[in-house]
Image (cartoon, rainbow, N blue to C red; front, side):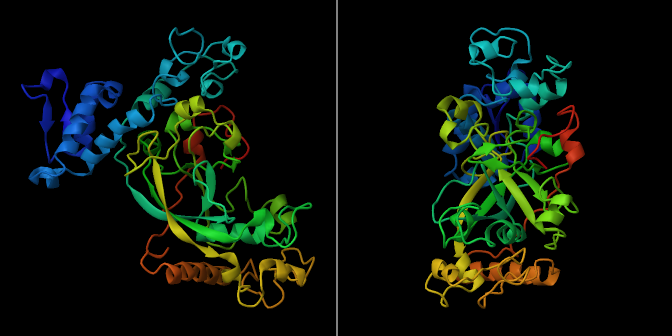
Length: 442
């Protein structure tokens, strides 16, 4: 490991090479010289540059993962000049909800709305309740911790999305485990032969879903989240790239969120909605999960993401190995896709999905409006019996095998199983919001 020591510890050579230094010792030494200065000064970048220069040297084998994490933290400065809620440009960092701060890119006082220059975390940190203006020591402490690698465990797993033929980034979007994506298709996509619930184009699934796309995820939690005993944060709903509810980025960084299907608020079982919509109980097991991946400017939809917002709200995506810093929690790579027509058994029997629909067929009828309830028709029975646990496990295995057959050189889902969704509602929101999370969060 290479790190810059405080001046009191420096000799003639101010860059100390300690190949056996642990992650925790490296972070401790950095903390002695101010977390922010250690992570975001030219001195630190010089130390990181030393790592980079020696990668081809005989001693390179002695540089462990910590060296790479420190190097990536320095690179983050170039990628995100202003880190939302982590450095200048946030109420949490400036520590005020009253004073005007000359020279700052945004403000956190009562007049910022009038001048349209409020920091993006103003509503969260400077709530209009009786506690307004009270920046907690925990918020200030976390904003510093989010500048550095966390040292958390690096998870590698698959995430899946039901998608059209169009390609778009995973971030500022939701995805799922195998069980989670299959449940989503059964309940929200397959019972329809129109692209929209009312009107739309006939002969296509809802939202024109044609395939299940798979991504390889690498994820590392931030220090504030780990200190609460979690690797996952709150799963929020993204609509057109916008976080439609849920908070916590200022406190925990841009962490990946998760929820187990059935634990709510959607889907939740038992519930009146679950009874009315026919999806309770959910029998896909403990690994039926949904995820949220916050990217740049999650507070706005795709059409409204300004360059300034992207700087202030950098999101959690980064290149290389996720460090667990507040703006580097996750990376992803494309890992192939499987046709829903192939999975359902439509391919080879019908000329197209449109022809399948034209003949009055349906992949899965949840309510029994066009065929037998909880069944498909025209010889397509892959999705039958949603409440049958064993049948659902067979569906999970079938989809995993379809990916393995198409991409034999990539690991199966069994070889890269999803981590446990350890999100804890009480631990996460304790002290974060006076009246709990907003709608759209779990």
